[in-house]
Length: 463
Ligand SMILES: Cc1cc2nc3c(=O)[nH]c(=O)nc-3n(C[C@H](O)[C@H](O)[C@H](O)COP(=O)(O)OP(=O)(O)OC[C@H]3O[C@@H](n4cnc5c(N)ncnc54)[C@H](O)[C@@H]3O)c2cc1C
Image (cartoon, rainbow, N blue to C red; front, side):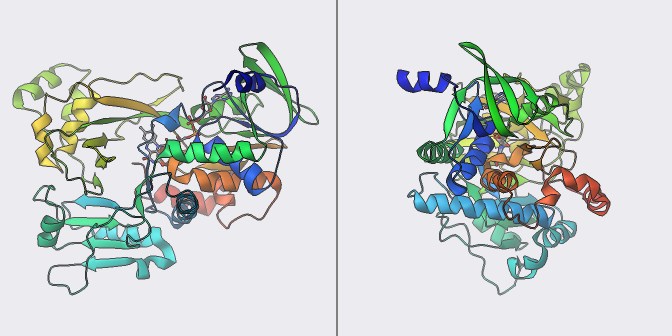
């Protein structure tokens, strides 16, 4: 960043119509929608840190339109369409691919198929294709990663010979693969950068500072802690997009949001032994498991009350995918459920590396080659899933006149940012709202039947 620009960003002299608090992917998307889509020229994007440097820097960067409820399917479908527009406009600067998600199970999975039908709602019948042994329908394996030409819909593959042929690295006991086709990965950093450039070109400004106080009268006065001391900004409206700190910002205007923070981690390393095929989709082992420890390791873990839990049954949904053009792979497992206060630098447990590796080797047994010998230049990172109980986001009025929230995007904020930002900007500007707007806002807590339905769902779509 040039010196002039830096100075300009520290000089906060003007009032603004909207101050967006937080320059993660979600705040950037909201600021982008306000300035580029709605033509607002005086939008401030405020953050003490470089854009995209907190949770948004930890994303696995995967996207999917697979959800246990049609509302979340519609919302992410909208977001994927917006990302596809950006990929198209920018010569695919965001590196969008579409190899799909391969959901794997050893069970017959009837309940999973029912869930799939419920999640895709009215389009389920035309979306879902089942491939049993001897069936005549054609299953198109993930031959291409080009998002423009890869198939849509969902392939349920129950023909085990076809599974072996298509996914040779998977364990022999996999009985069903549900291949979600509108799914893949993107570069979240490039997506953020692209929207930030358009935001600046439309007159948007970024301010370096932390919001430490908010007073409301006819407008908002924000106290910003900057390197030059505390400065004040007046804003007609505020958008709270502070990621894990969304609850802290809300508390500055005496609002308590129903959100918690749960730390989740990932690792990435060079697959120097070539254990995972480069054309494998994002593969998820849906089944719970007991981690593959040797008898000796198991005894040691059981002897210590701090580690005993690692020998008990673990939840499913461990995932693995090839990353980028080289030989790197990414592994993740959102088994942690402990709620904690948000932190700028969360503690990452070094044991996570071996835990996630052992767990992932159940679906891709060749990964056992790395037991106890993961490469030294491994990348281990993590951040908070900021989430509501039902794992739906909070987008819309925050509970004080002129204050809005766009947050609680849990483990789906990269893929949902574009639609979340667009929806938030529609609330702020009083524009037309999509059908799902109320249900993704705080208003859903007044909708008893919806909340009853959500609490009855088997899965909350946490990955
Ligand atoms: C391990 C992991 C894997 C993930 N994988 C995926 C995935 O594969 N696909 C997917 O779609 N999503 C994924 N996610 C989720 C996704 O990363 C998040 O939902 C998303 O990044 C949240 O973005 P955000 O802008 O809300 O938060 P953040 O990126 O945390 O941004 C919030 C910003 O607010 C700023 N801020 C905080 N307090 C203040 C203040 N007082 N004043 C001003 N600014 C403030 C912070 O500095 C920060 O820059 C993953 C998350 C994790 C942790």
